[in-house]
Image (spheres, rainbow, N blue to C red):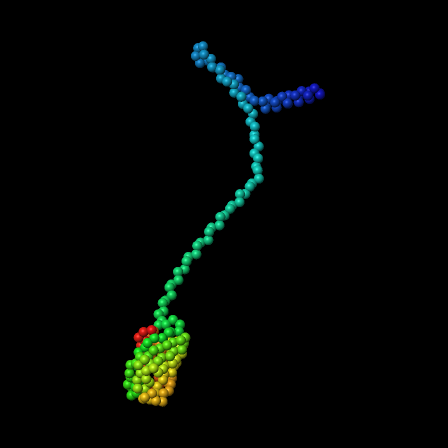
Length: 199
């Protein structure tokens, strides 16, 4: 019984060995022409070996996003400021030689010349040529220049420079070289205009 069992195991092992052994094909001898023999080489069939497939871990490649550059701001072009033409910048300087009209009574006027001196805001006008009421060399107008319109005092007198006194007036700068002087009004003191001849 033991011998039979050992024989069976031996036959089983031999069968597996023959199953795994390569298959050899006997070469074929072919005669083509008289005296010529062709021998085909034997064919060896190797057993098929199945290579296991190894599945490695899945690696997720990170997606790198390059930030886009911010859009350049559109420059804003401002409209040019309007140019404002003004006869003076800041406090006007009225110094120089002027020619103006002076009342002689009964709505009559005479053209005379005066020298205007301005120190800071203080203006003093002295007559270069005079008349029968206020002669040359006398101060005819004093004022404080505070803007284009300012208050002042103008000297008046009776004929022969008698009873001289000061009267309130309003001086208006019409442009850099033109003054308007409004006094008490009436026949003896109408509105007068001065024009600058030179600085």
